[in-house]
Length: 321
Image 1 (spheres, rainbow, N blue to C red):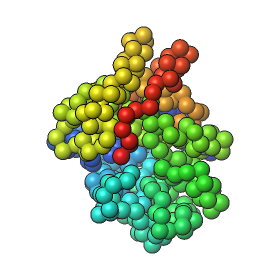
Image 2 (cartoon, rainbow, N blue to C red):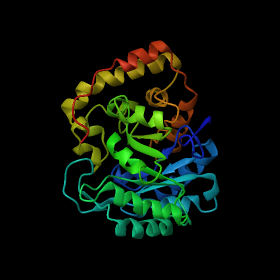
Image 3 (cartoon, one colour):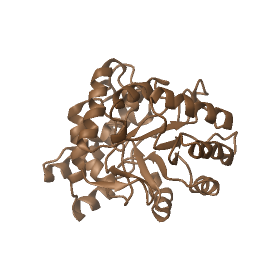
Image 4 (cartoon, rainbow, N blue to C red):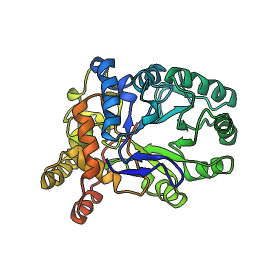
């Protein structure tokens, strides 16, 4: 796979990464298979998918354990990223339903050690603030995370779902290596301010849900297509009326894919990859087939006509959360 760097000063990574959340959290509970997920993680490294993204809250806690087992004996091949700042038992609603935020320095100091223990490593390559805690100044949270860098427990720091103002406040304390936010053909909010700022500053941008939580791959036409107890069934865009309205987006993606002999997922990923020098999407999957499909999107070159048609897609029906 072709590579880029994690921002101007980061390590080399494959241009497509792997998000691990769905292996133990939120999506398709009945379809989880630890052995299969371990195999997918190791196969990802063989394909050049080297940015591996997890978080302490996924599971909670079991995702880091799974990733740690998968990377045992292979740690040096991965650029390992995890996150801190979300905790179980918060107020329902918002961008993290059922979860709370904890950016207190004492929580960060404790959490990084617990993450390293679960991951079976002495450091992570990227330690990210999952969400800013509105009750704690970001400077205090970021300062505690910077302590982890000084102690060699993290090599660099990243933010998730933040504004440009929040990035600047963090930068005043310690360099920001990456920003992670949702970006796809049906979620383009970062294109207005956050992504241009990251590009200007040489900060890596890591889009999560670049396939619209699987919708842009053409896998769901009604809520009944979702696996049982899947968290997506609670989201506005996955309600039947919205799903029907949003099929127009998938139809165009399929049309472009047909011109290239590609899959809709590959077109959706190729569009995301085209949004900047240091954009590294982290689609999630539990299956070798979709892993290989996602990795191959790195080689898909969209034409000016393709990009114009995709850029012209209407906004989706329904909010993100």
